[in-house]
Image (cartoon, rainbow, N blue to C red; front, side, top):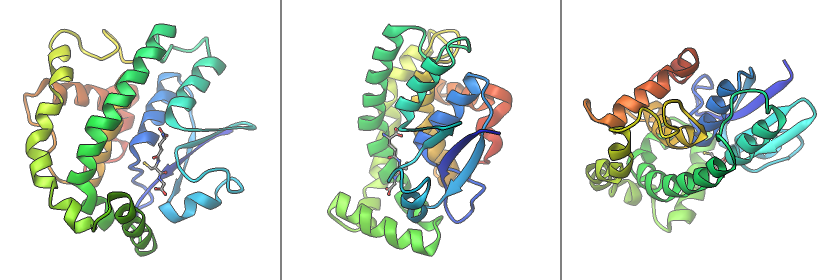
Length: 229
Ligand SMILES: N[C@@H](CCC(=O)N[C@@H](CS)C(=O)NCC(=O)O)C(=O)O
């Protein structure tokens, strides 16, 4: 196979957990494009593909290298126009940008506090040391101090999903009757939490949980190929 996705893993290299890489996994499946996954730990990223990137996902498609989950989705849309659309047109690309901003600013920022120590604990020792140093610089405090805010974040998390929940009472996917890249943008961080942490992020009966389960079922259940923590 000529298509390779570099995806971030912890000590268990069979459990890719990066929220952004999961967006790409579902994007590839949506287009019906198969790929091999190359698992990498945090400290391996800077050496892959001749130091092509400092972050993953990174997709090699033949002789093309594409990074960034949104850029990869745009690349797939342009390169494989005869496959099912990830955006449903130009307006869909623009709206997906809003979904990405909302997801990054609202979901990622909250979830990272909830699952921070679970991510850390699942890494190789060498990656644990890198993760601690880099994240403590980013947060300006210790991992433990950030994680202390996690319980309050978890209590508030369901409320942050209210716009999504209200919409999902009217339609099965963010894309309408069928999923689009916008669905995968929001799926990514929830899958990140599902794989790295045993904390219950979504409650039974919540339309968001029902939508998330539908996303896990997509494409022969590729999202379930990695079990919950
Ligand atoms: N905007 C990028 C973000 C990718 C990103 O932040 N990747 C993280 C893993 S989830 C990473 O590779 N981090 C490397 C590091 O922290 O050293 C995308 O959407 O793909």
